[in-house]
Amino acid sequence: MSNPFDLSGRRILVTGAASGIGKATAIAVSRLAGQVIGVDLDDKGLRDTISNLEGTGHASYSCDLRDLASIRSWMIELAAQHGLIQGLVHAAGLPCFVPLKVLEPETYRDIFTINTEAALALARGFQSRKVFAGKSGSIVFISSVMALVGSPCVAAYSMSKAALHGLTKSLALELAPQGIRVNCVAPGFIRTPMEKRVAKFWDENQAARIEAMHPLGWGEPEDIANAITFLLANSARWVTGSVLTVDGGYTAQ
Image (tube, rainbow, N blue to C red; front, side):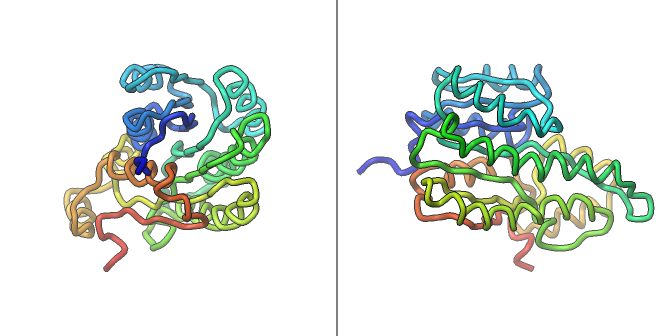
C-alpha cells in the first residue's frame, strides 16, 4: 500500500510561510516530499523558511495580499514558472484585539481583507486551468476557535474567521466537480508570533486562565501543520466542506 500521507509530486502554495503556522506547514509539506511555493510579505522570514525545507524544487514569492486584484495574475505567473499546483494553504492572517467602542472601520476592514477576502481571491486563482494541476486538489483555510466561541475584544477577528467556515462549505460544493476539496482548520491558542502580539494585552492571571482552558496545554505550530498536511494528502480524499478543530480541548468544555 502507498503511504496516504505522501505528498510526492505535489506542489503546494502556502501563504504566511515566513513564520508561525505557515512556516511549520511549509516544513511539514517538504518532509512529506512535497514541493512548496511560500508566499509572504516578510521577504527575510520567507527566505529563512525556504532554507529550512527538505528536498528540492521549492520557491518563494513576496507580496502583499491586500492587493486582491493582483492575486490571480501572480498565481498564474508562479504556476507558469514553477509548475501547476495541487494544493493551497492560506495561513497568512492578522490578529485584532480591540474593544468594540474603539473599533474603527479601517481596522476591521484590513483584518477582513487579509483573513477572509484574500482566501476567496486565492481560491479563485487556484481553480484556474492555468494554476490547478487538474486532479487531487486541496484547499485549506486557517480559521480559529474564535469563530466557534465568543471572547471579549475580538469581534473583528472572530468575524473574519467565522466567514471562512461558510466560504469553506460553499466552495467545497462548487469545486468538487473539478476534483478540488476545500476544508478549514480551526486552531486553539498556538505559540506563534501572532499569539505573542495578542498576549501582550494579557496580565499574568489572564494568561494563566487561557492556558488552563486548554486541557492539553498550549499548542505548537507543528500541531496545526500536521492537521493541514492530513487534509492536503490522499489521507483526506473523502473529506471536504469540513472544519477540523485542533485546539487541545478548548471547545470541548
